Structure formats: structure tokens, C-alpha cells
Image (cartoon, rainbow, N blue to C red):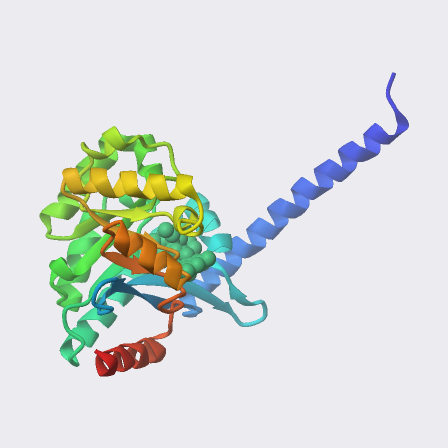
Length: 280
Ligand code: C2E
Ligand code: MG
Ligand code: MG
Ligand code: MG
């Protein structure tokens, strides 16, 4: 027999789903407007050589400033942009904007810095992706050696197709980095066959590396294997001096995180570079 509450529960359940899909549709249409009205902008987080403290480059991170809702985090809108396909035009804008900015920095004397751009699988699957990348490089005149593309282990869901595309990207002279490394379902032996240049150790391992034996052991294993197959390693989510000390001791050369700087708008990033040049 049916309890009296269950019908209500069902209604509530249904209503929640409906609300969620209304919210999603609102967000989706707001995102279309946002692209047209330039509500997106980029912040840059420095990547640092842990031994010399010099900036080796920066990761471009997208931000959405909505006129009424304020700043919406990428954690909220990127997944929806991926589901709806809006990540394709948005990602194209991000790539172009970050290459344009980097070329500008090189031209005004901030030389030798590489820009890292996050790219979703959905973008890689776009048959026009390679042509778009070539166009961006041509239009912005950025030398491809200064561009790095960050992909996540989600590429492994469609590995054969994606590997072909990654190879083409690399043939252009662009570097490829595997983001959030260690959190996905890739085994270390898989990495050997992927056309990548850099492993980016996920922040969850860095967080307690100075006080947790397991995290420390995982990071050491990643560093050892990366070294033996010729991959570079960068650690993300460095928040403490203790993180820097431990990572350096284990042989990790590069890092990024709030300890050095939060992601910064263009002007603040330039100030950060100026300060660092002064202290070297
Ligand atoms: P991600 O690519 O792994 O980026 C690192 C995230 O960690 C960024 O969050 C960054 O602000 C944050 N972070 C940096 N240092 C620290 C630290 O020391 N401690 C902590 N707790 N966090 C730190 P953000 O900007 O909110 O981006 C979140 C995710 O959204 C990114 O993860 C990436 O997957 C995605 N995303 C951001 N920008 C883009 C973009 O332009 N395109 C695409 N496709 N995805 C993007
Ligand atoms: Mg990233
Ligand atoms: Mg990451
Ligand atoms: Mg992440």
C-alpha cells in the first residue's frame, strides 16, 4: 500500500528537476547574451620556477561578470557551456584573447612567458578546431612555442580520436599538458602513449603533501615516472611555503598557486611581473 507522503515526494522531486532545468535554460540564454556583450574576461595566474622564483608563464582562466548576478565562477558555467556546445565559440574567444595578450606582453618586454589555455574535449572534437588554432596564431602573430594547451583526463573517453588531434596540435609546435593529473581514471602506463609534454599534478595531492605520507608518495611516483619518460611536471594548488619546500626537495621544478599569486587581471599581472623582476 502507498503511504500518503509518497505522492507529495514525487511532486517535490518533479518540481526540483523542473526548477533545475529552468535555471539551466536561463543560464544558457544569459551565456549567449554574455558572449555577444563581452561579459567574459580572462585572469592570468603565474607559473613559477620553484628554484629561481622566476615566472615561466601563466594560465589563462575565464571569468564571467554578469551585470545583475555579479561574478559567476567557471566551475558553474563551464560544465553547462560544455553540455550546450557554447564552449566552442567561448573557447575560441578565450584562445584568441589569451594569445593576443601574450603577444602584447612579449612585445612590451615581458619576454619568454608561455600561456596555458584550458581546452575542453568538446572543442577538440570540433572538426574546425585545428584550423581555428592556426588562424588564431596567424592573426595574433604569437609563436606557437609560447602556447600550451591544457586538457584533462576526460580525453581518455574518446582516446583514439583525440590522440590524432593532439598530434596535429603538437605538430604546430604547441605544447600539451595533462591537467588535474591523478584524479581521473588514467593509469601511468597509459601516459606513455599519449602525445603530451607536461603533467600537471592535481592540487588535491599538493594540499597535504607536507604532512601526508600517501600524497607525498604519489607525487614522488609521478615525478619519477615523468622523468623516466621525458615529461615535464608542474604542481598546482601551492598554498604554503611548506608545499614549495617539499616539492623542491622531491625534484619538482615548476608550480603555481595562491602562495605565489591568485589569478590576476591584466594590470595586476603586469604589476606582479614588475615586482618579481625587481626582487630577482
Ligand atoms: P583548472 O584548469 O585545474 O584550474 C585551476 C583552478 O584552481 C582555478 O580555478 C584556479 O583559480 C584554482 N587555483 C589556483 N591556485 C590555487 C590554490 O593555490 N588553491 C586553490 N584552492 N585553488 C587554486 P578556477 O579559475 O575557478 O577554474 C576552475 C576550473 O574551470 C579550471 O580548473 C578549468 O577546468 C575550468 N576553466 C577555467 N577557465 C577555463 C577556460 O578558459 N576554458 C575551459 N575549457 N575551462 C576553464
Ligand atoms: Mg588548467
Ligand atoms: Mg588543474
Ligand atoms: Mg581543475
